[in-house]
Image 1 (cartoon, rainbow, N blue to C red):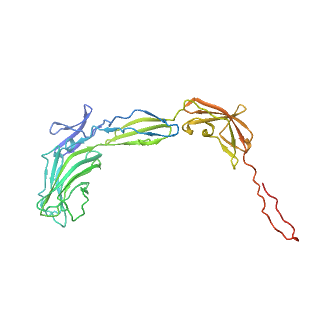
Image 2: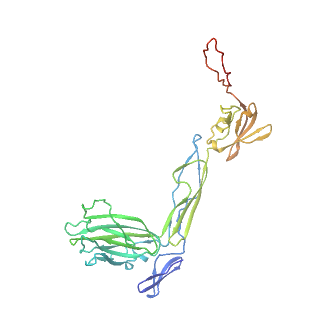
Image 3: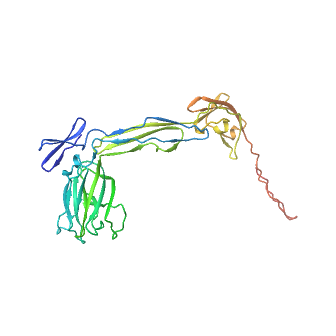
Length: 384
């Protein structure tokens, strides 16, 4: 839904007209076209289609997975000083030392492309006098803008008249050079982006002053309000290496009104598939712990790709054998095996295995010893 806004001497109601959010001023009977808050969900642009990646190298078990990330837009985004951010909705005010003059000014003749704020020339070193141009934000989102600042007057430095912005009175000084306090520069420019802002916040551009010798003019351009958050909310990262499997990916866009849109797609990584399988009869010896586990690597003699992509089925005398691990109780037994690729059961090979104990017994034999002729021998028998 759209939301009504109340400004001085105006009653503004936002209505969805022709699928966009339109502001109607009932006092002036003027239709002020503006994107503010809409019931329309964000639009996700160029959501990728499902894709399949196949491993081509029989000696590799993963593949590079990448895609071009989608983007999102919303009917309530604003570019330049227009719509709810039209220059006439901004107000000039001062704070700081109350005994000083208020000769700073706000020049909106360049709007909607830019506007300028010039600070007062009546600052004092004991307490800054701030020239502010402010607006109350009507939606949650992010702000970005380009800025430049020039110190006016002979020998003037921005260190004495800094540009800044505030949110609910909390100041962030604009500085891209990192020049230490006390050094000073005469001009600077930069970009402020992704400034988080909430519905009801008071946002101000500010020019400070702590001297009477100079002023600073701050120019703001390329102003934009993004009433939208957009990110990948589920799935693997683009540019990552992945093993065979299916990977769902989700991107979510949410505007300041709580409307959401999703972009979802699947990425399938296929294992290397050999044209055929060959396997061998095998005698499997138990290890020193009397255990052995059957693996595709031990059975297959052809190139096969990823071991995890194969299924081994065992039987003895026509009866299914559960698992692929053997112990001492299986010594001397013959088993039939069947191995196949889990994505293509027709890619199969069959043969036999014999379980053996190939380790000789270990005797713990006592060491040589010397005893006296009159002593009774005490010799423990060896253990096996």
